[in-house]
Amino acid sequence: MARVTVDEVREIITTTLSDDRVTVFTTVANLTVTEYLGSTALSADLLKEIERFLSAHYIILDDRRTQQQAVEGVSETVPFHLGYSFFNTHYGQAACDLDSTGTLRGVVNSKGKTPTFANQLDIYYAGGVVQGSDMEFDS
Image (cartoon, rainbow, N blue to C red; front, side):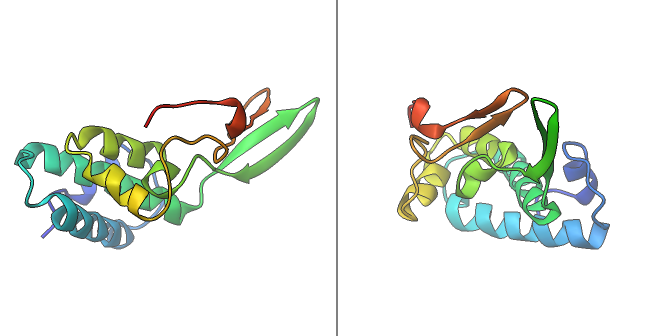
């Protein structure tokens, strides 16, 4: 049983998805949190917030969010891109940040992905693209 409701998820993300579709993602988030964090010492309140942010993470992936880019008067809409796995969205990153056990980051690492982002991440901003190889983040 999900720790969060559709309305609680909608408090942090705007989506045109139906309540039934959002429920699919709260269920997936619940299974993820229960599987990876259910036996940890994290409080029920914190597990609920992690589940809420993971629900939003999965919604964004389904919504296929895009963002507008403009360079020298030329504008293009491109798929939203941030990183890999839970690092693919700001919501997934927030869920990992809330997980003080580091378990969710470990899930990313166990899939061969690294949260250091070097050479893996292009950040799009109004002035263009910053290539991942130009950036260094600690894991």
